[in-house]
Image 1 (cartoon, rainbow, N blue to C red):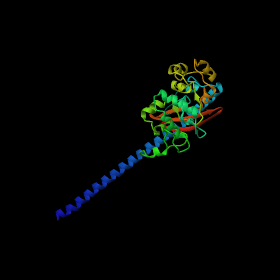
Image 2: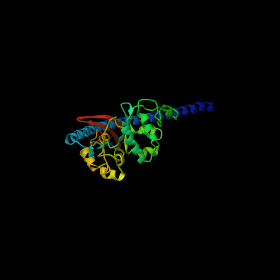
Image 3: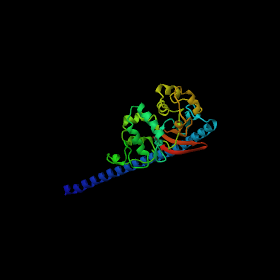
Image 4: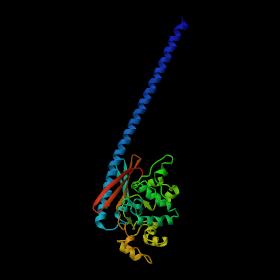
Length: 308
């Protein structure tokens, strides 16, 4: 009788132990889930706060540009918009902001005007790639990427080229939205991208080049016959302060910038990139706002978080 009595008791004990173990596991999971929920709630609260602070910095950027636009008719690297906003202490952290202009470059989207390749912009890109010792085939590929048709230029690339890649994709056949698209274009690897990216941009079609903030090679590209030494002297490495194109023409010793070559050139900027850095409880947040300024019109045409 004794062994038979002990067996059910032993089984019952095992069941009790198992039930306790399962209960502990469930309790631990509930605690962990609750902790995760609390962490998510804290992160969400921080992010909402960070967005509000970033919105304030966006308004700051627009205000700075409005005041700058009313104060002068040219833009340069010493303007008020180029000055970093000092760190501002806020509950739980701090915020800071900075801004830079985006027009000191060759705009890839200007390679096509009214649906057709633009000869003047192409000639500027030819001089740029020549200085960088890159193939001119790249210009056809760039043009095919932003033109509206699917017919490749002589040395270009359209859907037939990109659909054969892994993974396959198609040419955009519209204005480039972000310079990162450059990596999708035939002939552009990491090395080519690193060479090109400081001198080119993806702004709305028609955006002008601000020679006050242009790189030395952009000067070489837009002024036929200019050497890098001459460009460095005039550009001051992106810190020139010309008030008008006429002042630039007076400095072109032995060179000329004909009226037909002046199209798309200027000393004003239409697009700026504002960066908002917010730190709350040790967690960093970064936001970008691309601001367009045309006359008295100032608007944000793109927002992003983390990267631009």
